Every structure is written in structure tokens, then in C-alpha cells.
Image (cartoon, rainbow, N blue to C red; front, side, top):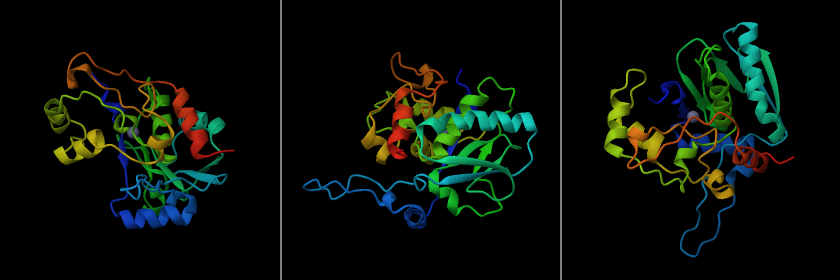
Length: 243
Ligand SMILES: [Zn+2]
């Protein structure tokens, strides 16, 4: 059975204009380059990346225990060799990224969308307990979102043979965080067209890929939990935050 904990919520700010303004204000490069196809003016959405080479202040809002905090720091820091950003972890209520650890949710705002959240609220929830066997995977995955990475199963080249009626049924009826049909469409099926898709091909080994249960696909098709940064994950981050 699929590990439900790994089904994180990637949250994007609902007001696209506000999200665009925040992204451009952080880094004008987020406007991207519109490729000039003859008919289509732009195929690339704007991105939500942090200004390159800056330091991100990352706040622990609810005083997790020291060993818990250190495990989060160690996992998140696995991205550092591949990005031109620094992390400054602090015990504070204020930060570019604000982590809460006391509920059951694993979620993150996408990149600079974090700038739009009310300053009293977390931008990332890491409800996974430090004893959980996939604690590290989940923390790395959520930080991938915080750095601006999308869900790999929604890569435009993914072509996952979903058994859609079964996927709807599974998510609508599960006990924890059931999803509406619309939320399933948005979180599972809708392809993205941000820089991730332009820069790197689909990678079924990406840590940003949800596990895919065989019971939710047509034919014999599944993806296990990817527990390590893939080559593509590293390459994408190097391209998004070049040194
Ligand atoms: Zn996710």
C-alpha cells in the first residue's frame, strides 16, 4: 500500500497576479524568457525562484527538540552543494521560510509564494516524526518545493498511465486529508510548464516524484518511494541557482 505520508501538499498562492509580483520583486529573472514560437507567444510560465546567491532565513517557529531540529537541518542541507543559496536556520518567528512541526501535515509553499503568507503563519509544515523511516526523504522533498521545484509526476512528459477513476476514488475516500476531484486534478494530473520542464526531462527517480501505486495505474506500472536526490534533481537545482 502506498505510504500516505509521502503525499505532501504543494501549495501555490491562489492569486496569480500577486504571486507573479512577489516573484518578480524577489528576482526579475523570474519573468523568464518567452520563447518565440510562430503562433504561441510564450510557452514558459514565470518561475518562483529566490534571488540567486542570497541567504534564506529559515525559522523554526515552534521550538522542536534539538535532535529533531538537527535532523531537519541535515536533510535540508543535502540540497546545498547544488544551489547558490545559503541557509540560515534560526529559532525565531520570522524567516523567509517558516517551519511548523506540530501537526500531521507535510506541505510547503512553492518558492517565493512563501513571501505572501501572513508572517504569523508557517510556510512549511513538517508533521513527519523524526523517528519515521522516511523522515529525511520528506524533509528533502518539502525543501525542494521551497526552492521552487514542482512535482515530478506532473512533468509534461511524464505520461503516467493513471487509472483516473481509481485515483479520484482513492484520494476522495482516504482518511487523512481527502482531496476533492478538483484538487486531484490540480495535484496529480495537471502538467506544469515552468522552467523545470524546459531545463530537464522527466525523471522517474526524482525525489520530487510521488510514489505511484500499481493499483492506481493501468497495466503494470508503479514507482516506488525515491529516497535519494537523483542526478536530475541535482542538475535541475544547479541550473536554477547557478554558482
Ligand atoms: Zn510534494
